[in-house]
Image 1 (cartoon, rainbow, N blue to C red):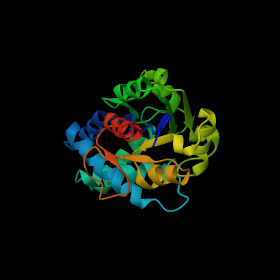
Image 2: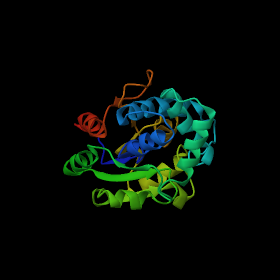
Image 3: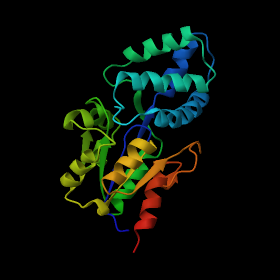
Length: 232
């Protein structure tokens, strides 16, 4: 495989949830949880979220965020209806319009720098609400990207193959010349494959059961995996 570009998901790939904010909100409800515990719970919750999608479901629907948070809380052992309702209400109004997805993955810059240093184009394809480019710019990632495709701005979202085709057209590439890195199997891996792109699944906690695709614990590891596979 010879690739000329790597397309990245944003959430849980280049950035992640603000685990500190979630731990603090839990504390306000009398629930003690460390940031590390919240992080590990989120790693498990995303696997449960993935299998909860039905065909045609939108990752940007409000019910998706509520379900994701409920899975996270359940993984923490937080099952009180009152506490779940309080955290759900808090999430809906927290840091609007950007919400919780504002924290830089530790090796995101190193991953993008490595890809660009290796001569590859880099871009983001994200299911988002119109804010992802601003978030990435605020975190100083925008300068490493050729472009950002936000589902709410192009009118189609993953796993629809059309959003990947939009990226390919913008990069002037064929499907076999690009690869994708994302965190949800049914949305990212299957969506990319439907468009003809190979994909790497993010699995930082080793929480995913066996899947028919390569996995990586970090986005830097994912880039290295693709570069290793791209060597003639």
